[in-house]
Structures are given as structure tokens and as C-alpha cells.
Amino acid sequence: MWQRFTLYDVRVIGHYLGVLVLFSSLALLVPFATALAFQEWIPAANYLLTIGVSLIIGSGLRFLRIEPGRLNRQQALVVTGLAWIVLAMVATIPLHLSGHYETYLDALFDGVSGITTTGASIITDLDHLSNADNMWRFMMHLIGGLGLIVVALSFGLFGKRAGASLYMSEGRSEHVVPNVVQTTQFIAKIAIGIILIATVILTGMCLFIGMEPSRALLQSLWLSISGFMTGGFAPMSQSVMYYHSLPIELVLMLLMLLGSINFVLHSEVWKGHVEVFFKDLEIRTMVLWIAVMTCVFAASLSASSEFSNLPAMLRRGLFTVISAFSTTGFQNVTTNQLTTALSSGAFLVVAILMAVGGSGGSTSGGFKFSRMGVIMKSLVATIKEALAPDSARVVVDYNHVGRRILSPEVVKEAMTVFVLYVATYAIGSLVGIAHGYDATQAIFESVAMASNGGISSGLAAPGMPVTLELFYILQMWAGRLEFVTLLALIVEIVVSLDPRRLVHRS
Image (tube, rainbow, N blue to C red; front, side, top):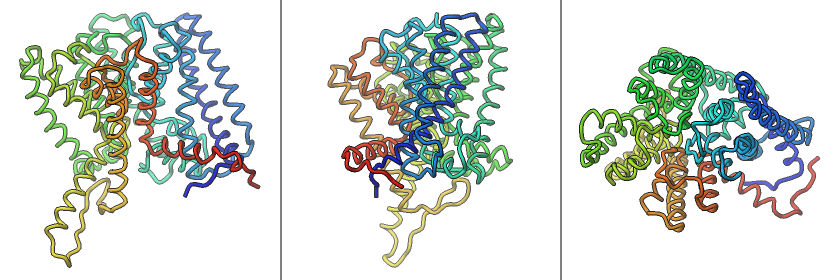
């Protein structure tokens, strides 16, 4: 039962939100230092200004209550929901000041896309963006991919009790170790380790194709972050096509696969429990799902003249499949090829892959394999119950870091989120159609935004209708929070509209 909002709640929520905003100032130091290193003085001034704004907002919220008090489940959901909004708005300031966006709303679109790791972008003249602004785009991916709360907790920013509530409010319920702070630190170490290794490998490849050392290092770092965080931003307007390199595409495919796997399963492999990895419901669901969809996609591509030969199908087709299901959004085909050269069947397969997404507890978006596997197990249980004698008790189990019994609560949660995603995909499609766009493209774009997939059919572009742009921003935000936090925030606001409910708590 939701309780009414009190002034005490407002002050506690403001305190924790302020801490998160203040913490974001540290992330802004990275592009600021990059600007100084490359003597980009105007971007340096922009980031210095943004750091000042962040410190002012964060301090104001922080001192709403000096003593933070205990943070309950409802307050944690509201803190998380508001944090993604406030930090996205702060992150948008240097993007807007860069001069590469037609309006502030366009910059906000990219800010939300970056921090939710959607990867769709409506920036203009990306190829001439400063190193500092590019660095900030990928820092947003890093923070958003790991999760704002996870990053904050990995620095020990909150206590254990508040940390546990905030950790769960960001759509995470599984722990690598019992201690939530140690769990977040392990997640951060795994991510940073993989990104650094990939950066070294990609730097060598970029040097081999003729890039100058500093540019090779920066672009390799950015691609590594975007690949493992399943973000989708690229430093060049042609995305991965710019490099014309099969080895680079292979490394990025591996990064996207690793990024779409649950961090808990990463920890099991790290501990040497490889058998746990291969028995897991998510991994088995992923392998079966990708195998089936790849076969369907290949069959559909055979009807296209540009993808009918085997080398093109393996290189472009497989890369597109992995980019779509991991909800990364990298493209090694142009948007025009995506909408014209692909058959309607292949186009639909890409949308379905984005809609489902990767594993729960990973950096990918979408509905998730964990819920898909649970729903399939639920169907098996229903069939068994229908065939079993009246006196029989049907028990269905599954493996997910150990043997678990399929309970009605788990099935209910999976079905609820599934229905919310499908409803959002459908509403977004209708919004696109209402703006006069082709139905197929409207469906594809809606799925790309709500699943944080990022592969665009071309509707998300500079000059798009303001109402459509606002709705896409809402879809990206809702999809990243997996709806529960968003709904909690909406309920709290609605319940608190009555000013008589804003009362003091002793």
C-alpha cells in the first residue's frame, strides 16, 4: 500500500538525489581533463560551467536534510527515477553548448540516449565533434550502462541499508556476493577490466589501418566502452562502417556478447564454475533464441541482392543480429540499406531481437532472456498441470545460479514487465503512425527506443516533430528503468498532488 508523501520524504529523497548529482561532477572532470589535454578551450569552459551547475544543484538538494535518515523502498524508487531525469538534464548542458545540436531538445534526446545506453543520436556533424564532447558521450554510456546507483555504490557513497534499497530500485536483485557494496565493486572491476583489454587490442588494430596514435587510442577506448556497455554511440557518423575492418567488427561482436551476459554469470565463470554458466536458464534461452532468429534472418536475407552471398551475410548479417539482440545499436550497414535492402522479414527480425534484448543484470536493454525463459517454463508448467491427474502436484524448476523452483510470484513479475514492454512498443508505434510515418518504420523505431536498442530506421533525426521526440525520450527513460521505478515515481507524484498530504513527520 503506497503511503502519502510527506515533507520528511521530500527532504530525504532530496538529500540522496543531491549526493548523486554531486557525484556526477566527478564524471564531468574526465571530459574537462580531455579538453585541457587537447587544448580545446571552449569545450573546457563548457565543462567547467557544467561542473559548477552540478555542484550548485547537488549542494542545494543535499542540504535539504543534513542527516539523511533511513531510506525505505518507496523513497529509493523515487530517488532512482528522479536521478535519471536530473542527471540527464545536467549531462545535456555541454552537449547543447557544443553547437552540434539544432535545439536544446535535440541535445536532451542525445543526453537521455547516452545515459540510458540507447545509442540513437540526432547530432549534426559528428565527425568534427571535439574530443572532450566525444569523451562525455561515452562517459554517459559507461555510467548509464553500469547504472548510476551501481557506480555510486562502488565508491561506497551510501550505507549498506540505503545501498541495498537503491541497488534493487535500479532493476537489480542479484548479488555477486552478499555485500551490496562489494557486488557493485566487482561489477565495476569486471567492466573496467574488459574495456581496458579491448582498448589495447583495438588500438593496435586502429594503428594498423593508419590512424595516428592519440586518435587510435581515443577511438578504441570509446568503441570498447560503447560495445561492452551495449550503448551504440560511435565516434564517427558512419558508425562501425567507418573503419572498413573485419577484425575490429569481430572484437566489437565479442564485446557486445560479453556485455549482454548477466554480471552474476561473469562472476561464476571468474570463480571457475563454468558448468553453472552453461546450465543457466538465461544462457540456454539465449543460445536457442539466437540460433532460431539467426536462421530466420539468414533465410530472409537470401531474398536481398546485397546480402545474398555468404560472405556479406556472415559479416553484415551476423553483426546486425548481435548488435540488435544485445541492444547495442552499432551498424555496419547504412540506415538506407536497413530500410530498403533488407527484406521486410529481416527488418522485422531485427525489431524482435531488440524487443527481447539480452540477459537480466547485464548492460543490455529489452525484455530480457531471464523473463522470456521464465514465461516459457510457465507454459511448460501449465501443460504439465493440464495433463497431470487431479491429485498430482506439478513442480517446475530451473537453473539460475543454482536450482530454483518456479513460483507464481516470479511468473507474475515476468508477465507484468512483458505486458508493459509490449504495451509501450504498441503505443509508441501508434504515436509514430499518428505523425504520418510508415507503420513498419514506426513499429521498428518504437521498439528501438523502448528497448534501448538504438538501431534507427531514420525517424529519429534532426527536425523530427517535437511531440514525437518527447515521446521517444520518455520511452528510452521508461525502458532503462524497466517500468517499475517509473510507475513508482508516477504513483508517488499522483498520490502527493493533494497539498493536505504534505505533512510533517516527527
